[in-house]
Structure formats: C-alpha cells, structure tokens
Length: 52
Image (cartoon, rainbow, N blue to C red; front, side):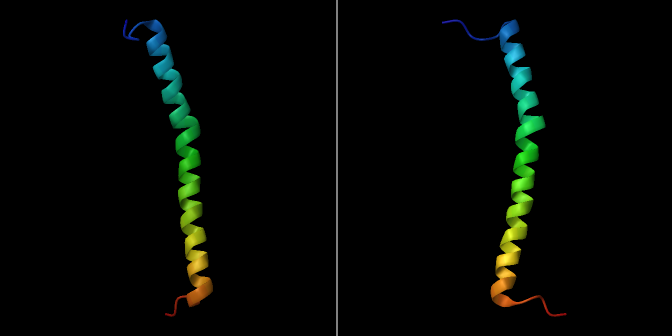
C-alpha cells in the first residue's frame, strides 16, 4: 500500500486543519465556557451567592 503523501494528502491535511481551527476549536471553547458558567450557576443555586 502506498502512503498518502502526495498532493491529495496535503490537500486533505489542509482541509482538516481548517476544519479544526475554524469549526471545532470555537465550538469546543464555547461549550467549555458555557459548561463552566452552568456549573457555577447550579452550584450557586444550592449554596447561595458568594459572601464578601
């Protein structure tokens, strides 16, 4: 079998890189920040707001 190192391999690698940087990372970052905010919100529902 031949390794995918030709022009089609570089094109596929570029498409994958663009997908990861343009689609996947922004979605993951929004999910992580939203999940953290949701967790803090749920925590404060049970414990109340922080007291200074």
